Length: 598
Ligand code: AMP
Image 1 (cartoon, helix red, strand yellow):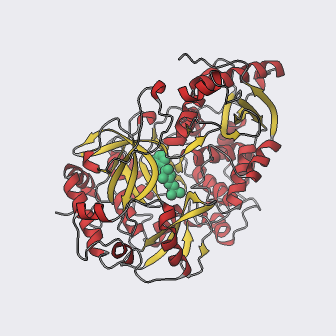
Image 2 (cartoon, rainbow, N blue to C red; image 1 turned 180 degrees about the vertical axis):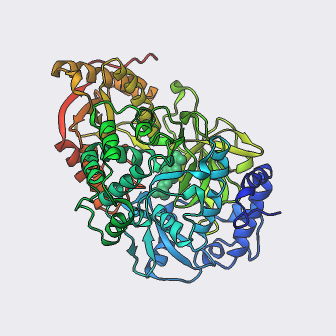
Image 3 (cartoon, rainbow, N blue to C red; image 1 turned 90 degrees about the vertical axis):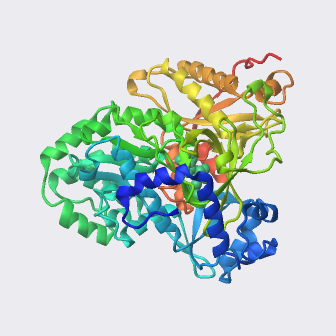
């Protein structure tokens, strides 16, 4: 049985998916057997007494413990320090992926061999055939793709630490996958994508997109938030961009020599006043509804991740896109590219990812959950149940994903909570529920990211009744300096000048929003707020326009990549809190208690 795609076998990609998903459990056994036989001599597996040559699933489970990143950290640190003995993996590591997950404030480092990136390429070969079933003519069009890279750092032992997206994006060129791969036929040149300066990269990728506006069939960024950043960049810089187009010159801000040379020679070659006028007219007004479709009339879909905490960007992307479908295709992390959405046209709020059974050996840690809010356990710890195999998960339950990979991670908890929604053949499909960490807690209650996200969605509904006030972005903070402690939600708002909201009006609206959030919180939260006042009134702090951009720039200045950056939904880091507090223009508290009947 073939559990890996052959090179260049794009046409058979869909058949391949049918095949591996039809034999989910069998493929999983083969994957584990391959991983264990390749790595039978590694120190980690010997340490836990896995008999040499043993590929048996049950023996593996009984000997090798489930691990958190912290547990693997001493071994990974040895790799970082230059110990290249086979500690975790028989194949040598070629790089370390620096992940957005952190331990002790530092990014987690996930070691990767030279096989990991090609494995991701193989996985993604299925994407074009998959979406081509839904949209005609993708093969002949171009992709306005906002790809970015970030700095790499050399670790003490000599391996480079790099974001997995950076590594993947660079590899598109290393492997010669462009421009012959129609899925990756980008409007932007390699010089723009590989430019480390985000301003220059976005500016030139936009310029290239304008010149090829009729050819663009897809707009692409990894996370939805990245695309929103790019659209806001366009709002701030369209005038300058149009000047360049109409005069056939290039802004002096584009100083990267290779990029500048490419742009001058191949893109901004002569004045194009008509094009400049068209873009300028589309951008000049206050109303940006459908802006993407106005500038790029032939786009068929937006390819961005909109699940998990990215779901909050669906309304704003719908607004900008002018009805173009949003397709959220990939579930991927530094540990591996695990999931694909096999139903690209589904409602963006209903996306499920199929974990492709040949990518890793997957197990699932059942979580104690209850469907009823009133029954939320006061101690929402993971249960000590046995881990469940991929083929055995139950629809509607919640699990934390645990992976064993070809590159030497054994039973590692990924800290993502997934919930099966159904099966594709025998392979389960999962909704991404949340990152398995509690976001906010000031007493015994534990508020998760998805609970806060749900509450904010209610806020968006409330705001619909008040003109065009919109939440641009938000984050939160558990303020335990007050007694009792309380939740603080930092919100950046956008409103058009026509709103003319008075100070009093805004107070009223924001107080309603505070109470709306509290009413959406868990029973435990409301209980401790109402019956046993251990939680104080929720506070919204409205921050100045641009505060969240500053937060992002701050993260980037500390080594985050624009492509991988996600707004933290809870802030604990003091300099970030100071940045947010510096931007506060008004504060509002819940005016009354939320509903809570025993
Ligand atoms: P990183 O290792 O920095 O690439 O971050 C990976 C994490 O991003 C995952 O563990 C998830 O928490 C999140 N993530 C990746 N893909 C998705 C997705 N499709 N939906 C929601 N969250 C995602």
